[in-house]
Image (cartoon, rainbow, N blue to C red; front, side, top):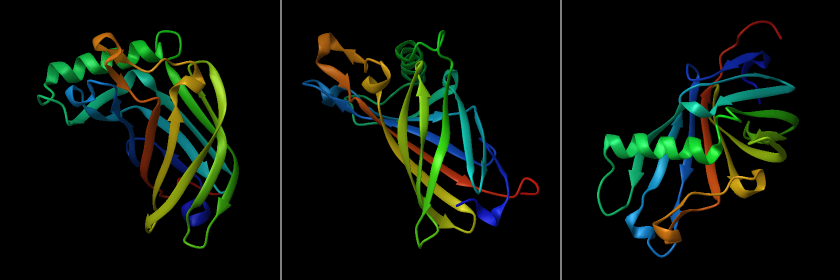
Length: 180
């Protein structure tokens, strides 16, 4: 699935890494479904390799859908701070993913199996890959916070919660970095 059969550097210059959270609970209508950009991340991709490191202190709330009132810049900063607290970024400032197996489909996408390390725990995670253009890919997965010892955010005495599963999406354009 590595375009042009070479090695590729990954990061904000080659794509976007986005997290999506969803609200639940009795007061869900008061909260927002969030789109959060990871602004610092890096990796290497190749025909038989994928390693990615994510700086969890670089989360920026891009959008909040729903809710009683729109998000303000202050709300965005507060939410990012609460996310860092939930993730305990003082102890676990990074997450990492290392691929262990690649399965290609007829459309140039497929699946990548590997290990996600988050919050001091490592668990298997399968990525779904879809080719969206020449050298362009969309990679998706769902991460269940509690499987990594993370307690999803809860407010308003538990009436407003963030769902346990967080959607991860990477849109990336691969350009050759050097010889295979």
